[in-house]
Every structure is written in C-alpha cells, then in structure tokens.
Image (cartoon, helix red, strand yellow):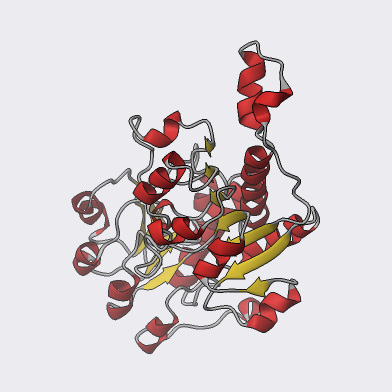
Length: 334
C-alpha cells in the first residue's frame, strides 16, 4: 500500500487524535508542525500528499513549491489562508467544513448583541466595583420591534435570523449571492449594504473574507448608521475596516461593537478597542463547543481521507478543479 504524507501546518487544539483516527485506515505518515511563515510551510509541506491547515499561509508562493499535493483541507468555513485560484490551477483540491458550528456562531453573535444591548458587561463591572445603580446603564432600549441587519445570509445568519425573530426583532439582510426567494423563506427582506446601515439598530456581520469583502464596511457605512447602532462581527476581522470602526466609536457615530474577530489576532495590547467600555471582545471563540470542535476535526480529516481514497470530498471549495482532477463521487455525498 502506498504511504501518504499528511501535514498539519498549524493548530490550536489540545489533541489531534480525532484526525489520526479518521486517517488510520490509510497508510499515512502524519506530520505535525506549527508554521507561521511561507518558508516554514514550504519546508515541511514540499513533498506532502495532503495538507491540513488552520492559520498558516498557503499562498501562491507556497503552492508553487508543492511537488505532489492532492488536497488542502482547512479547519473552518473561511479559506482566506489559501490561494484557491493558485491551488485550482495546479490541480489541488481545496476543502473546508461549512456546517460544523452553525448553532455556536449564531448563538455567540446573539450573545454579543444582547450583552451590549442590555449593557451586561458594563453593569457587571460597575456592581463589582461597588456601584449598585441601574442609572449607570441608561439608555437601554427594548429589543422587540427594532431591526437587525445581517451582512451575509448563509447558514449561520439564517440560523441567527430565526433566533432574533423569536425575540421580536425585524430582520433584513445584505447578500448579493442569495436569491430573494430564499430570504423570503426566512421572512427576511434583502437590501443593499448602505440601506442596511441606514435602517438597522443592530448589525451582525457574517460575510467571508475575500478580495471583494475586505474593508467593505468602512467610513461610508458608519456615516449612514444610527447613533444607537450596535455592530457585531463573528466572521473575519478585516471585513470591517478597523480604523473606521474605531473612529465611529470614538466619535459617537455608533454606540457599541461586539467582536469575536479583529483585524490582527491576537489583538495588539495598544489597540484602542480594548479601552472602550462599549466594546465587548472575545478571542475568536464563536465557533467553539466541545461538540463542534470534534465535528470540525473529524470532517477536516475526512476531506483528506476522501481525496487520498480517490473521491471528491463532501466540502469541495473549488469545483473548477474537476477540469484537472478526475475522482469518484461518493454516493453518500450525492
């Protein structure tokens, strides 16, 4: 049996046992690294048959040096760490996991929104510092009847829409790739991005990070927003231009922000966002539960197992690669 080299470029998990279990039926040399640069990735992955990736850069420069790689499988939904076009041109399958944390991320986005709308963190800090006075939380507004705008309307914001509607929120969304009839199924009205900022009391960002979406929320949008606006981001930090966000908060153009992601992670200790009492920040944890972590790890590894076994993976990112790579389609994925 042919032996395959599978490299994990980097990871933040306490164990990789689930990945190893999934790949155990194959003859695999399982190599674990902690790469941070292109050069480090090239050094360990040059002769790899498959790559499992978290945050390490899989750029065009890296891909050009891969001698026999068949698949790059990324932990998570976003594939902004991978140059998908370069991989496709070289006949390398790119895979992700699109359905492992829908409840977790939508729950976390709602939790950030509620904590800011009800000023939970501020009031908690005041009480612990010896101040027992509800007036320090004013003003707080009733949620029911207010408008939640969603930037992106894939699986996660669709789940969030249902949860928000149960609280009496009216939901609108911006997503140029979603048909209006799909939005109507969720009782959600599609609008343009600028209109979303004009109309929303709360906004939750769920757009993937691409060339088109990087910095898509900037000064122009914040100038249109209500002063009471609370914005939440559980997608990718650079979708919001962070300097514009900081200015909007400092100038009182919006009232608060809940961030699970920032432009640079971990956030720099000198970042002004850390000093703002109307900003709640969590360390890119929205995706996490014990269950979702296990699901993510097994599905990421299964993408690799599928390709090394001669099949297309369930979560194929670059279908155009089929012009270069002919594999079987697993019946269970049809």
